[in-house]
Image (tube, rainbow over all chains, first blue to last red; front, side, top):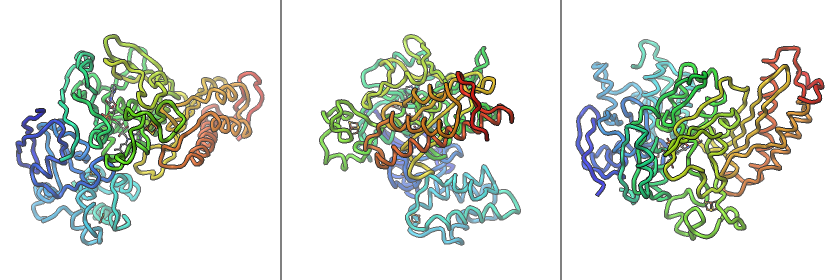
Length: 167
Length: 346
Ligand SMILES: Cc1cc2nc3c(=O)[nH]c(=O)nc-3n(C[C@H](O)[C@H](O)[C@H](O)COP(=O)(O)OP(=O)(O)OC[C@H]3O[C@@H](n4cnc5c(N)ncnc54)[C@H](O)[C@@H]3O)c2cc1C
Ligand code: SF4
Ligand code: FES
Ligand code: FES
């Protein structure tokens, strides 16, 4: 049996899971560890709903074999607010999560975990992104409900806050 | 959990070990996995062992060789290429092609070697297993027919690598590792058979890509359905070097219309020997359309793709002419090599 123990850190906590070599990171997160916030939209890289951070970089967990992230640090949508609070204890949520609510960027919500992880990663890299940069960063994310406009506005609203960089 | 067939993963740290690992029956390279993992999930590939090359540091370097040529390791990621501080300024056409591949998340994981070796695609095959269960296996699934080209005796699935046409236009070379190292032109990497589309031997792999010391001027164009994430329906890359006001080493490459990129030699000869007037560029683009025969295995129709070949080649050549005239200075119209006639003024 092509099985091994996989160790990785998810949302700040070390985890050890028994996996097969063919298991994807998405399957580990959802089926193995119960982080079902990360969605399985297509399983083949075409929709963006499974986006998580691997060592801080926005990646698709459905096309990442779990064995290849041995020892790495994964952040899922469940860990986004905690991750933000470590840097900004006064806040409850990541400002992008609040902006999604304020701008009406969530309808059915299926794309939201992927959109927020990609949007928050963009704000890390470019604190005040313009519209084109937002569209580019979210280009691999499908939304069947909102028509995208509200989502783009939510990311832009956080970038526009001006006061401090979203880092 | 998916019904993905089982396999072992072997992670290597030294490329010297690659040929023997690849010699194992059923072994296949795993680079970024952005092509291979979806194919495993849809049961389009059935390796028994994946050889993970992402830990091989030699494959992950971008270096300059003794003769001043840039060498990009096969496992360098597409986003590493985009983020490189100077490479992009020297090879803007390569950057354009890399940027046109997939999405930011995928580019953070996908590699240049994986892009060159990406499996061929076809709308009759790149579908979930339940979709395919309604069709008997085609050539690429070890069956005995082709749905895209019923009269064809081999698979005509599409090579969708965006970097391949550009690297061919640039005159780049590939280091093929294996029992012995050999350097080949990028063009020589492709067999033309969609089922077994690479010319690599069983123990061979792409080790690196070497760019020419000085980049020719070049233009890349990609036509696809959704500009944010789709595979190409037609790719065009054109390049030339200006020599005393005359374009030389003209390369016109059309790709994503079959299992291998196609050089439009007739059009290259035409533009090598005559001035780059509007009419000649138009003729060259018609030659391109006549030279390629897409089948109905892309997402967009055959006629649309044929027309796109013509208009993309024309657009790319027009942009290339403008770029060449800019570098050649105000006085230099583009003349042909033999005629030395005056070319098309701006
Ligand atoms: C939604 C989506 C959109 C995409 N859009 C595009 C697109 O627009 N254009 C495009 O070109 N591609 C596209 N791709 C395909 C793929 O992401 C890219 O081609 C990528 O560059 C493949 O690189 P990789 O490192 O992930 O390859 P892998 O998946 O690791 O490997 C691909 C193939 O190449 C072989 N291989 C890998 N490295 C080597 C090597 N060094 N030597 C020999 N063989 C090797 C593997 O065995 C495998 O067969 C898309 C993929 C998805 C999921
Ligand atoms: S081109 Fe023909 S043989 Fe190849 S995958 Fe498509 S239908 Fe199958
Ligand atoms: S589930 Fe990963 S991209 Fe769709
Ligand atoms: S809110 Fe429903 S898919 Fe985006």
